[in-house]
Amino acid sequence: MAISSLQKLASQITKSPSFALSSRAVIARFSASSSSTSAKVSDRLVKLFAVDPDGIKRQILGLSGQTLLKALTNKGLIDPDSHRLEEIEACSAECEVHIAQEWLEKLPPPSYDEQYVLKRNSRSRVLNKHSRLGCQVVLTQELQGMVVAVPEPKPWDIP
Image (cartoon, rainbow, N blue to C red; front, top):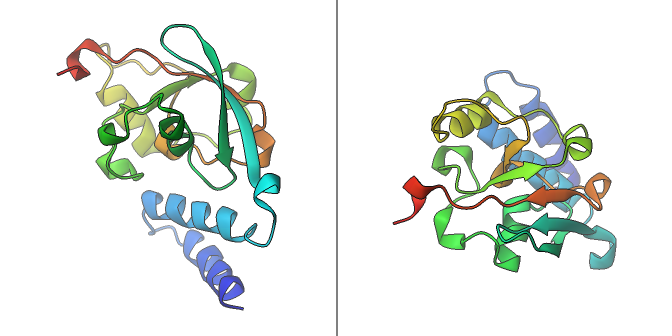
């Protein structure tokens, strides 16, 4: 009962044009995870593949409603300390990943804020069309088998 009330509220809020984009992402994550709380965990598993900076392809497990960032940090491919919150305002693009073209079409387009963060942290100020922020990609069952590449840390990000 409470979950259905929250989902109705979330759908009303997300229709509001004045609502912040980051808040919409949080609500989308909550809605995706709460809608499947009665399902088995095995039904929520999303299997992905990540190519690390050394070129090694690894299988990654995540859950529907979880962000790609969380799945990559659980596997140790992204340092959890590099990204304090899963909100765009706290993002420094250290969770940047490159997503294969066939999977980009299955994702919602990047928000203005996400594009801004990616451009701001690029030396040439040019947006790579395969770049996305792991904190902004919410896993779904449609992303089963997705391939992402974790780029090397940029020299200016290494202490």
